[in-house]
Structure formats: structure tokens, C-alpha cells
Image (cartoon, rainbow, N blue to C red; front, side):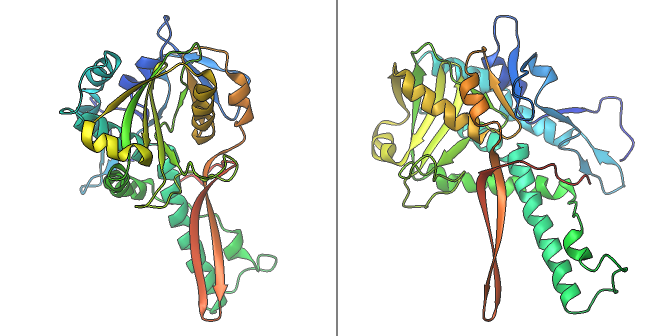
Amino acid sequence: MGKKQQNDKKRHHFVPKAYLKAFCNESGRVWVYRKDNPQQPRPESPDSTQFRNYYYSQPKPDGGQDNNALEDFFSTIESGWPKTVAKLRANRDMNDQLSNLFEFMSLQRARVPAARDLTEGIDAHFVKSQLTSMHARGELPTPPLGFEDLPNMAEVAIDPHRSIHAMVDMFQGMGALYDVIGLSVVHNKTSRPFLTSDNPVIWFDPSITFEQQLPYTVNLPQGPVALIFPISPHLAIVGDTALAQSYAKQGLLQAEIDDEELIKAINEQICRFAYESILASALGQEDLILKHAECSPVLETKEIRGWNGSITVHQQVFGKRHTKPKW
């Protein structure tokens, strides 16, 4: 790691403080339920949670490390978020100011550990498959006695800088999603507040059963697609291909929901899409949180073999999150 400067930013928040503040209670804290230990939630300030040290740092040509450039760029998008939330809460017309909403949602999908670990997992599988193929072709030295299966036993760590580059493609790729859905602002009028998480931008195929749904697995451009992005305990952005025509004519739609079962269903999706942490403005929804503590959106890789070779298929599933090898 290169020499750090006095003004270097160390805490790189993958969930911005500007976003977390909308979910704080009267004491300025948000309840953090870690999926590894959901029975013991902790009240945290926005500054003290949802960050990793030097998470967006990049190597410099001179051998040093730039710890500020990406954080400074993200701040240009985050700075307008409180005003956007205030306008949505006040039910004001946002149709000529939607750029901050789209940019914020896209960035919040691309920057989180759930997305970056996915990219690094795909790269790690590619490296390992190449190693296995080279071993099968006799292109590697003979492994020591007792380690004949060494290529399959090896753990592959990926330079995290690679997943920083992949954020750009993911950010830009969300345009295809926005092209086929309509967006609405949902005002939660029930006593059950919206939850959120360290992976708050979610979408799925609503035409199949809850048990059969896979994270971020939809049929574009035909659809159907449902998108959820909680904004505060009482506000959420909900997107759906069923709203596309109305959205094209009227712009951002507004809706009030007083059906607690529907809010519960939305929160259940939020809980299982959470990667490491579920975030709440108040205690009281432990039934949903504990139900999905054992699953997160993770990478599943399959090798489909044919007569002339094999095809690697990557998909996301709801499964147990594993600690990746440290770089």
C-alpha cells in the first residue's frame, strides 16, 4: 500500500451517510442487523457503519495509492440526495429533476460489496478453471505427493481494483432496466416502516413464485421486472414493467399504501437481498430478518459439458455468503 497523505479519506462508505440519515431514529442511530449475528442488532451512527477502509482506493502510476478520487466523485452524486428525498417526501413534481434519482440508484447498485464480490467471484472462477485446464494438459509441474488435486484445492484471490473497473459497466448497464420499467414513489402509510440494507437496489421477476425467484435474474427487454429501492422508513421507489405506459405519459407516479401485508412483502424482499447487513429505523421486524439471515444474493457457477467442450454459466442465487480469500 502506498504512502498515505494527511488528508486521505480512510472510511469509504459503500452505503452513503446521506442515505443512512433518512433511516435514523430520534437518537441519530440506525439499527444494524448483521446476517452473521442477527440476534444482536447494534444502534450505529451513519459515520460508524457500512464502510470499509480504503474500499475505493486505486493504484497510481508512480506506485502510490489514490484514496480520494472515487470518494470525491461519489460525493458529487450523494450531495444532492437529501434534497431529492425532501422533494419526494413532499410529493413534489420531480419529472424534470430525475437525473439524481437515476444516478444515485445506479451507483448504489454498482458500488456495494454484493456487486463487487460477484465480479471478483467470476474472475476467480475463470483463473481457477484455467489452472485446472493447464493441469489437465500437463502444462504445470507435477504437484507434491498428497496434493495431486492441488489446482482444485487452490484458493484464488482477485485484485479488488478489477471490481472497481467493473462498476462502470454495471452502472451503465442499468439503463437497459430503466428503459422497460415505470417508476412510482410509494408513500408507506402503515405502522410498519420500510427496512433497507447494504444492498438496497433490488429487482426480480414478479411473475414467478417467491421461492423460485432469483436475484437480478429477469428477461430483458420483455420483462416482467419489479424493482424496489427504499428511500426512508416511509418512502420507496417501486418500478415495474406494468407501469411503463403510465410512466411514459405521466412521468414519476405517486401512490399511497395502507396495506401492511404489502409492506411486509416488500420488506421480505429487502431482507433476502441484503448481503451482510439489514438496516432498520426501529426494532420490531425480527421475524423477517431472522427468516432470511442465512441467505444473500451470491454467485453460483455451473459447468455444462458437451461433446466439443464445456460452457460456464454464472448466475446469482439466494444462498450462504462465504468469506472471499483476502488479496
